[in-house]
Amino acid sequence: MESPNDTKNEEPVTGFRIRSGPTYAFALVVFALVAAGVSLHAQTVRMGADTPPRPGAVDTTVTITVEALKPGVYAAKISYVWTGWVELGDGILVIDTGFSEAGARALADTIRARSGPQPIRYVVNTHQHEDHTGGDRYFATLGATFIAQEKVAGEIQHLLTWAPGETGDSLSHSGLTPTVKKISLRASYGGTKRPVRVIHLGRPAHTAGDLVVYLPKQGVLFAGDLVSNRSVPWLLDPDMSVNGWLQSLDSLLTPAFKIETLVPGHGVLGKPQASIQFTYHYLLDVREKASTVAAWGTKLNQIRDWGYLGAYEGLEFYEEVHFMNMRRLYNEAKGIKTPGRKNMHVFKRT
Ligand SMILES: [Zn+2]
Figure 1 (tube, rainbow, N blue to C red):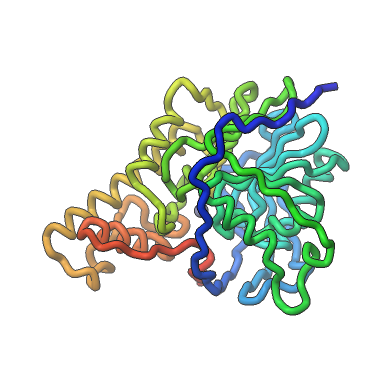
Figure 2: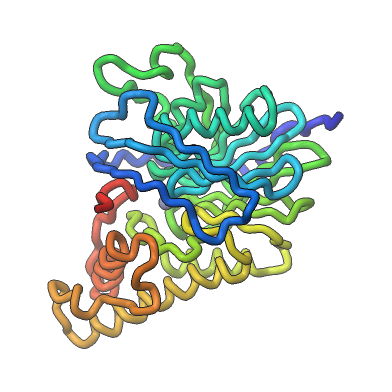
C-alpha cells in the first residue's frame, strides 16, 4: 500500500486577487471530435446529455476518448478538451473537468469503470477557463478538493459558490461547500508509486495562473492550455502573455522535465517536443505577422485579407479563433489594450 504524503504548498500565498470579470453568455454546439492520431487503444463512448444544460449552453453530445498512458494514469478527451486522472493510492486526482456537467458525469463514470470506486480526492484546474472547469460543480458533489493557481483561484471559487439559476443544481442542493487550495508555485500529491507535482511556471502565459501536472516517475505531463497540438490555441485571455507563454514552453523543454508523454489542453496526442513546438511556432508566427502588418499601417478591418496563416489553415479552431488572436496581437503591437475574452465558449462552431 502506498502511503500518500500530505499535500504541501511550498510557497507562501501572496498577492492573491479576485477578479470579477463579465460572465459571457455562451453558445456552444459540441461536435463529436475524435482526434485522428489517438492510439488504437482509445475507447470512445458517446453519451447524450442527461441533464438540462445550463442557461445558454447547448450541450447536445459528449464524446469521451480515453487513453491509458501508464498504469494508473489516464488521459480523457471530452469532445474537444483534454482531461485526465491519476490513481494516488488512496483516491483519484482529476485534471480538469471539461465544459459541462454532462461531460463531468461521463468522465466520473469512465474513471469508475477504469479505476474502480475510489474517492475523487482532488481536482486540479490547469486554469479557470470554462471549457476546463465546466464540470467542477459536479465533481464538487463527489467531495473533491480543488487545486488552482492563486491568481485564478478566485474565479474558480466563485464558480463553485455561485448558485445557478432559480432552481439550482446538484451542488447547490447538496449543501456542500467545496475547498479551493491555492497554489503559488508548486505542490505535491500522491505516494511513492505515482508522485504528482502541480507546478506553476512562474509567469502569465495562456492565463495569469496556468498549472501543469507532472508525474516525474511516469514522465507524464498534463500541460493544460500551455500546449495545443494541431489545434489553434486561445490567445484571448485578458492576462495572456506571449512572452511569458514562450518562456513557459522553454522551461518545459529544459532537463527539469523529462516528458515521455504530453497531454495537451486541446488537439491531438503527439510527441511531446512536437506538441510544444507546435504551440511555440504558432505564438511566434501570429505575433510576427500581427506586428509586421500593424507597422505597415494596414487597417484592422481588413484582417480577413491579411490575417491568414496558411500553415494553420484547416486546423481545429482556425476559423473560430485564429483571426481573433490576430486582432488581439495587432492591437497589442499598436499599443492598444483590449479587454480580451475569458472563455473559449464565446464562439459557436458551425
Ligand atoms: Zn484555456
